[in-house]
Length: 602
Image (cartoon, rainbow, N blue to C red; front, side):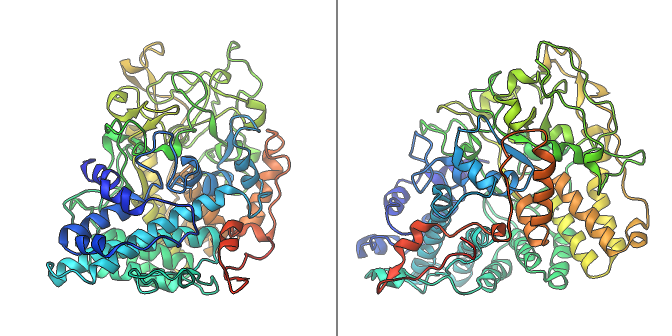
């Protein structure tokens, strides 16, 4: 199932054609007419399309030093947005020591300015993907050995990918310039033609691209890594949701729920085991609407195909080679506390804190929390005394680089299993790689987006039903973390005994209607926090809900009583979007004036 992705990053001509990131995000040397003529056929344009898919993870396949497509570090542009979406949203701390990758700490305390190189890396990598899509579409228009139907499918995939890259830029930077295949003269490059102002809202263009893809892509594809019709419909609905167009998004999400299938033709649904979404052995399953495909030990000599965006995010010491970043917050952990009815504490969860081992040496006995907990906690967060996949009981301080700075916990969803590490772990560089796909949209996300749309359009019972589908999966004991038969032999199997006091229930019938719209939306938003924790969504959700300043300020106030890393954290109104990279503003000068304008407040 990984073959398609090997082609994506391994095509030698793609490296030759698309290399080089030293200029502005759209300033490149023109392709020679010979190159373009050689590609203007069915085989050539499909290979260009594969190159457009190849930019999804932002990594340079050929680079053994784990660089991204802009030449910076791979983790700066991780497509799961663990820095910009999860750490900045309060799911987690940066982790490690405060001085290690200090640029991240500037970002997540909202002290970063437009000169922070991480922003420039992210901008350039997304625009590299856009450039590849545009060149694919440009060449496709001249191809004569394809039927109209074949060309429409290629155009649908290229426009789907372009819309993905643009939507990533839009939710991060807001003011981004739109450039498509019609804006550039590929035969004779005029540099100033690429200097496009960022003064227009690009959501309508993103919508148009996803709409075209939804109308022209097939339901199934030969390669599992390609986008299909239903991935495009889900993305189009998400685009509408981000604009508050709930009535328009709702029927699209209903179609995905009722009729959508994976590229393999399997009807979408929730996996029985929550962790199946984060295990390379069970990925590309019925819950995966669209995923970035990763693989390990592909013969390249590096880890460019092996999820190197997450390379820092493993427990420190222990069986892992790096690096102690991405430590879940106490605020997130407390969110998984449930009451006697198995429901979350929507307003005062931090007044019901989950016991932790802050300050307790790993040589001193520690008893984990015995209170009611949502079972998704222990598939999301590594905490002391609880099975850490099949690696053994998390030992506490021994696996934490600086507990005082970033807390006692470890990331979990990105970690490979010990039992199949020979297939899915990649040790070809100084930090771990693995073959766990990143699911850009999974079916649980679709259900919760549908619930949000239904609540906003007045159908509270239906919203409750969708939330309860997600909660009922979590409540199935089959998918809970279980105790080891022998803690000294974690791969020896598990008992039927839950590893903690898991207690979770669906909302009782009529709870949303009885509580009203505000209560329903609060419950839906909280469910997204739980279900999609550590998956890069939280900050962007808070921004689109208009809650970023309130919630992140609340988070800083609480969390700084536990750790020292975010002591200076301060969110202001400007921080709902990241700054336009200063490097790009400088490169956009035309007739003595910068074409790109900065976001307010920077």
